[in-house]
Length: 363
Image 1 (cartoon, rainbow, N blue to C red):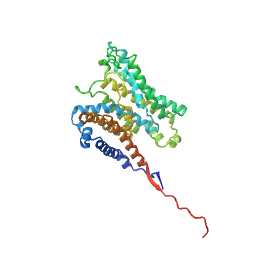
Image 2 (spheres, rainbow, N blue to C red):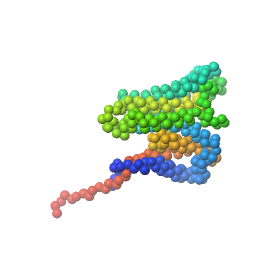
Image 3 (cartoon, rainbow, N blue to C red):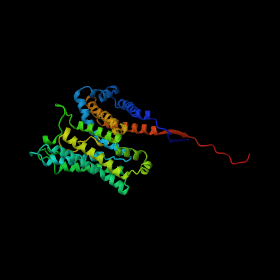
Image 4 (cartoon, rainbow, N blue to C red):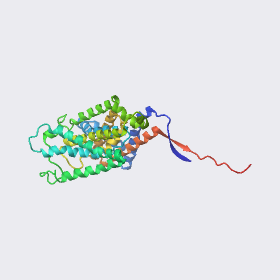
């Protein structure tokens, strides 16, 4: 007896739409068991994760703050995945965008720089993220290197470069020897949308990104090319679409959005550059992209849901002493179930029994 995966003749669109909900349901069941193993009341734990953060305006603002980088990065990643190329290094592009964009507030700190500083920072972060993402794209196009490995390895290069800059040339001399830059001047910070909170202009930029990519995918030739190259490569070649150009384009857009998210995060909620300012947004955004079905509007909803788990995890840590790493476990389990549900949409299990051996002797 042999268990094999057999490709389905047709894909159910209904199941494809509800599979993220199935994945979330299975994840919640699994987390309920995990909370019980940890000796915590599962009902109270789930309430802390998913209900309590929705009960006050400050937590709702924090959900939007957390969702902003997740949505921006995931929208860019979705373009790569729709084109059937795999950018796994968005975390590195996020970090390098933050470093490049922070150069201006560091060199202009304490001067009478004008309001041009913030727009220039956003441009620097976007361009740096795009150029950094082009490294694995070019390696794939020119040398056939795996973009999965090269983009992932570049994450560690960006992380170490950030660490070097804030511990060396950019360290704040008045920062009591902490590895951080000086606080950015007001002209180099993202404006707040609500006084008394941390919700900033980056949330509006994320919505504009979602709208722009939705229009590009649904209303432009380039969006059509991206979807065709990913879904039917042979048909794309017959249609004259250049897959190598699309690889470079999608990686550049993906990296640019990740870099823009990085500098917005530094110039917004954080206010200065320091190691570890990202809780792994670039990796979590991969879950957001797939949970949102690689659709910009779906990604917006998925980003808010994953942001809820971040805020809920912090509240569960305070209220119930649940380790914050449980949030990462939750996100990992969610990704597993999302990918498992996606696989079962395209394939089904089939048992193959060996045929009985026929005797060769004469009767």
